[in-house]
Structures are given as C-alpha cells and as structure tokens.
Image (tube, rainbow over the protein chains, first blue to last red):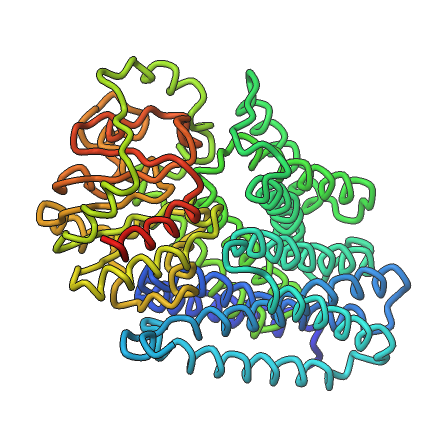
Amino acid sequence: MPLEDPTVQKILLISALYVFALAAFLGYQVISRVPPLLHTPLMSATNAISGISLVGSIVTAGARYNTISTILGFIAVVCSTTNVVGGFVITDRMLKMFKRKEIAKKD
Amino acid sequence: MSHPETAKRGMHLAEFGMLMAIIGTLMHHEIVTFRWILPGLAVGSLVGLVMGLWVPMTAMPQRTALSHAFGAFAAALVGISEFYRSGGHLENKFMLGALGFEVMLGALTTTGSLLAFAKVQGLVRGTPMTYKGQNVFNMALLAVTIGIFIYLLIVPGSMPLFFTMVGLAFVFGLLLVMPIGSADMPVVMSLLNSYAGLASAATGFVLSNKVLIIAGTLDGFSGFILSILMCRAMNRSMTNVLFGAFGSAATAAAGGEQEGSMREVGLDDIATQLAYANKVVFVPGYGLATAQAQHAVRELADVLEKRGVTVKYGIHPVAGRMPGHMNVLLAEANVPYSALYELEQINPEFPTTDVAVVIGANDVVNPDARDNPGSPIAGMPILEVDRSKSVVVLKRGQGKGFSGLENPLFFKPVTGMLYGDAKDTLTRLVQAVQHA
C-alpha cells in the first residue's frame, strides 16, 4: 500500500499515539524514582536526550527542500547538537563528582 | 538513574543509543546533501563541548535554561521549516495540529528560557515584574494565539497568519516568565524543561519519527514531574506559581514589624561553639552558590570531623535556582553524597543538633511558614533549624531575602548572625576552629 493511503496514515498515527502513551507511562515510572539528590543531573540528561530533535533537524537541513528550510535546518542542527554534546558532557561531569564517603576522603 | 552509581552506566547507554539514532538518521533516504549537516554538527559539538567543560557548577541553572532555549528553538525551527515547505498543507489535520503545537511550545519556551537565563544570571532584575491586568492581558494573548492556530487547522495554508502565531508565541514566552520571581525559578526551570520535551515529542509526530516521540515524551514528563515536586516542596499550586507573581502584593500585608533585634555574634565564639559541638548541620542556600563557598564549607566540615564532630548537610528541595542545585555544588566540593540529607530525613535530627549553620539560605528556614498562617509562604515545608540548640546564620547583609520576606528566625534568641561574604567567613572559621 502506498504511504499516502488514508488507512496506512491512520495506522501510523495510532501506533505513534501508542508509543506516546507508553513513553509517558515509562517516563512517569522512571522519573519518580530518581532521588532529589540527582535532580540536576537528571535535568541536564533529559535535556541532552531531548536534543534528539537533532534527528529532525538533520532531515530538514539535509533533504533538499528549499533554501529557507535548509537555513532553518542548519541553525536547528547547531542548536540541538550543542544540547546533545553539552548535555551529556556536563551530566558526566556532574555524576563523576558524586562520590561515596571512602572515595571522597582519598582526594 | 535511581542511584548515583547506576546513573553513570545509564548515561553511557543513553549516549550510545543517541549516537546510533543520529547515524541511522544520516543514512536516511531523504537526506541528499551533507553540505549543511556536517558544519552544523561540528559547530554545535564545539559549542556544546566548550559549554560542557567550562561552565562552573554554580552556573548550572543558567546553562540549563540556555539549553532549554536551544532545544526548543531547534524544535520550533524544524516546525516552521516543515510548514513552509508544505505551504501549510500537511498530509492530515492531525499532523498540522502537532506542528502547530510544536511551533507554539517551541517558540514560547525559547523566549521564556532566555528570560529565565537572564534572570538567574542577573542580567535582568530577579524580582517579579507586574502590572495591572497582567493576567488578563496574557490570557488574551494566549487566546488569540490559539485562535489563530485553530483557524489554521480549519482553513490551512495562510503563511502570514502562521508567522503571526509564531511571533505571538515568542512574545507570550517572555510575558509568561516576566512576573515570576527568582525564588520560583526551580519550578519555572522544570516546567520549561517539560515544554521543550513536549515540543520535541510533537516534532516526532510531525516527522513520524518514533525515537523523537519517545525521547521528547520522556523529557516532557520528567520536567512535569519535577515541577510538581518543586511546587509541593513550596506548598503552592502550579497556578499560584505561574500567575501569583509571588512577593508583590502579599508581602506588604505580611511584612509586619518584628519584635526584638538580631544578635550579631563574633567569629571566635562560633568557632568555639562548633569545635566543641557533637553534631553540626549545614543548611546551604543560594547564597552558597553566589559566594562560591562550597569548597570552604567542606574544609570546615573536614576540620570539624577531625575533631570528632558529626557533620551533616540538610538540603531543601528548592534551595538554589534549580532542582538539586545544592547537591551538585556540594558534590563538586567532594562532599560524599551519604552526608547529604533531604528535608524529611534531617528535620527530626535538629532537636539533637548542637549548631545549625545556615549559609545563604533564607526562606527555606523561615519558621513563619510553619507558625504564621498569614505568611505568604505559610505551609511550605521548611528545614526546622530553629529547633536545634543553637543557630548560626551566615549572611551577606541585614537585608531581606529575594522573596522580600522578614525571617523571624533571625530574631530568635538561639540565633546568632554572622555577616559577610560566606566564603570569606567560612575560611576564617576554618582557621579559628583549628586554633580552638
């Protein structure tokens, strides 16, 4: 069946909604177990993860649609890469700082 | 990520997954040219690395706000470009709906986060900015924006209207954060986090990309749960934080005159007190971050521990400018996380605490929240330092905190005030304790 077919469209949409609901549930379960101790790292981690919109930006910048799309896509790629790289680097840095007592004493 | 140890492993897993997703996308059949992608990736990585490696931990709230702005901006741009390409005629109404949602959220998060950044950074005054009829005006603006959105859904294809909507959303972002004071920044921060995530998820719907939907939703919910937690920690509802413009009208009514006076104490007295105490609890606040005093605190704690004093840290959920801010700062100074205690854990310990040292914190230790039902922060859970045998408050000056509230704790007989820069004071305390 071609992708433009309304039934295919509908199935795609329903599966997308399904994924959304599952992710929401999973997100709730996972996040509510994170202790306040780790809230800042959590935030920068989710930040990095949401930089996954990079995927969308890449498509926009790379597919030859038109000049405006490409320019907007380019800016979007820069923005989201900054988020991904910066987010992960800083989360790593933060998590490395959390030490147990014995280890902390050695420094 | 429920424990610091496993969190590291989880993060590496996430990094790997992300890399795979990006490579997968680069192979995508719709991609015909890399001319713009590669430079974009390079520039972004560079900026990201620089920010990631050199941003001091005290500036974490600023960085987070900025990166919310970036993420949301990217989502908005992708949405705009999609709309422009299709001339407003997307495959179906649902996609158009998701797109509108994405662009609106993206736009308002961008400007909102930038303003939040400016407020935390101190570029803009942190106090709430209000004017008469503000809420009405904001709501009207939001209604107009959504109205255009609905019109576009029914009669698609109007470019100027679409851009008006985007512009209005940008403006609305500014107006949304404007009336919110710095003290409420943790809530705003996590809320914006949530919006940025939802914008990403909507992008996923527009592009039919499941990875985007999952990641965006996770982010959206994480931010949402965090904001609810933060609100609960202040015993205020979300609407109250967003529309309350805290500390403007309410304070005037509650700012009654305080009985008694603040007792200033000498550095050496405190050093002696600390040196001969059994248990000392440090209560850090945003002042610790501004004074960059986290290392000095740990030095003092080390000296005390060497003398056999039990040292603990009591951390309020909304201390600082973003969720978990204080924990990260103290972790940076090598304080083991086993010494950091949450509100519920530390409160029962105060009656047996000899000295509670409050460093640059104000509202989170304000006993008015517990005792005075008329106080604007009534009902907010606090760290009950006033129950300990003696309290020392390290403070920059005699002024009020950023909420503008009077703090009766400072006037209690058990409390001694020590004015000055927190870092400087703490360093001098370390020396004094060593000689004690």
